[in-house]
Amino acid sequence: MRLLFVTNFFPYRSNPTRGIFIVNRLIEYGKLGVDFHVYGMAFRESFFILLLKRILKRSSLVPLESFRGIRFEYVYTRRGLLDILSHRRSDPSFVERWARRAAEEILSETGKNFDAILAHGMYMPVPAGLVASSLHHFTGNNYFVFLHGSDVNYQMKDPKLINIYIPTLENARRVVFVSNALKEQAVGLGYSGHNATMIPNGYDPTVFHPIDKAQVRKKLGILKDGWRYVGFVGNLKKVKGADRLPVIFESIHRQLPNTFFIVVGDGPLLGYLKNRLRNINVLFTGNVPQTDVALYMNALDVLVLPSRNEGWPCVVLEAQACGTLVVGSNRGGIPEAVGFSEYVVEGGRDFEERFARRVVEVLLSGYDGEVLVQRAKKFTWENIVKRELELLESSN
Image (cartoon, rainbow, N blue to C red):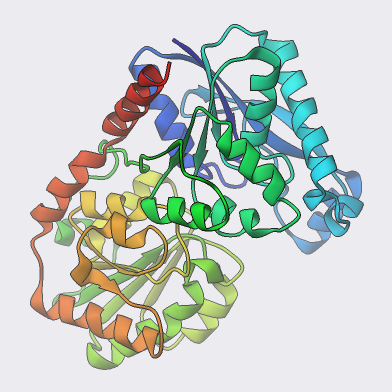
């Protein structure tokens, strides 16, 4: 079997683990003997944008051609200041034209020698799913669209774009959602669901596995006898609930003063969080490699996930694979990922205080980490990719 992957997710020089769930997935396809070619839908930023970013000390979006043995090819869309400020990014005629050009460029390099097209993401300005639809038009090969979260939760809601999204999904051989909650969101926006299936993201058991908590805390230089450890792993953005961390952490600290907090990740709220949390014990690690993420997850007693929306948060399974409990909000696919309703906190009034109270209850009562480890084993990348291959074979 020879597959063509088209993706809106891929590693950047400034953030190699961006889209790590695509890289991990492709590694497993390779292990299973599947031949594939991968194309990322990337930007080529104008000189003015590059200069502006240099002045503002922002990282340029430079894709990596190879990461962890996976080679990426790219189709570039020019991005200048006018493109960012204008309506083009959400103008259907521009989006469709860019997607068609991307498909033509891919075909000029690969020919038609593949069995199926797998598209990950429907993100502007060149949705991978729409490119796959164009490739299907040119070749007749089946295409499969994989949707991960914000493409449905936010971009599909744009009334100017709905007539791009709906036909792309309806005409796909199958549409794969990472959670049932995400599928229901798409159905609520007008998608019929007739070709929908649910396959979540997975985790890498060679990276995420249990390590003795005292030993890993000592290794990280954060071991304090009798202390408890609570943390957050992810992008420091409002949609991820990072703005809620100060109230949650401060409330936990008031009830359990001997608590050490860890924030793994980077984002626009980093400065705000450092300022708000300067009076309690918080370690900010910034972006770190997956191997270090696993160490910090093993160091935690509880990982918090107070997100406002998620498709299927990979951090949940990664933490559970380390034997660390996750307390999450009830938004999007979080309850499905967490798998235990008693560790899901309903949204609404006083959410942060109720969330903190639930974390404190867990810290005081404890939990069986082995139960979490055994649950996570169902979601290794090997098992997830085998499910995807079964879907492809049954859809011929």
